[in-house]
Length: 263
Image (cartoon, rainbow, N blue to C red; front, side):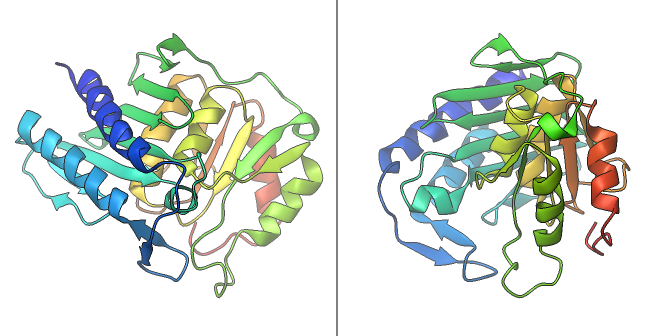
């Protein structure tokens, strides 16, 4: 089984586990802040995914949100989010997903974003295009920011941090046709790839939030950069994704405000 097929198979199995708890309310503990949640299903799904990856690719490294970390001499690393959108999941909201990406020699080469409650599975292979439920997808062709539908999110420390994306949200809400906030960075990126959103930006993300979704956008014909237009660094967590035609306008609008130190 090749790497993308493996990721799809494991994401599907984890998604079936998550559907057992989907639609209900779940007790959750907190991590770094009072609004950064983790549920029993996060831990169970991560354990399942890592067990399957260790069995199938024992020489590969692992990086996962809920504490799964395995260094490896291999140049390959799997980057896993068992539930992107945990707050949604904990409240019975259907917008959540499993995100699995493979990094090889510093580049993401395969990625899957599986949203089981929405019935959507996105996949991409470096140089091989992007799909949704097996059908090819492509970014939108919208070139006017005033007609664009955008997406964003806000960091977990937004209640106390000065760098919280609020000013950027207001600026782009004024310029765009609309801005949406789903609560899952991976799904936001997947929807840019599918042409539903024309662009997306966010700060203070983690590698597992971005890795698979960023590859989807690029393979669907879009552009993903940092806030200054530089190459994306997964560890920095500041991302702008678009259909390409709107990218300069997004960067220019963000640059009208002081760029946060986190980007």
